[in-house]
Length: 79
Image (cartoon, rainbow, N blue to C red; front, side, top):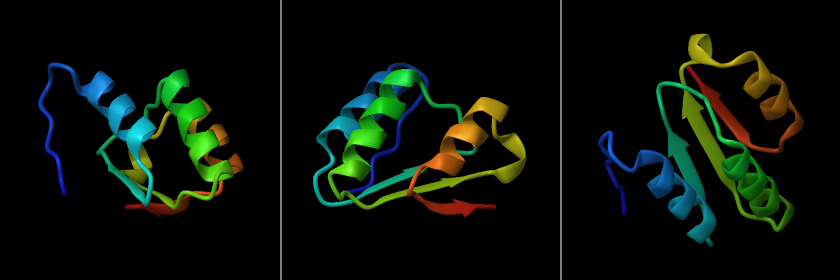
């Protein structure tokens, strides 16, 4: 089920969604800026076979996140 979040608690909610995903994970955000905790959780999920798809604006990526993202096996749907 889709979940729409507002300002307060977004990071905590994203961490919870990422940690609790067990069939498929789709993250949609206008900006790709991931905390270290979310990155580690995503790496573990992908290593364990969870399909991860990230949708974001290609012109709003952070340089460090671009490099990290390129090393992952996510389905890249930037636009």
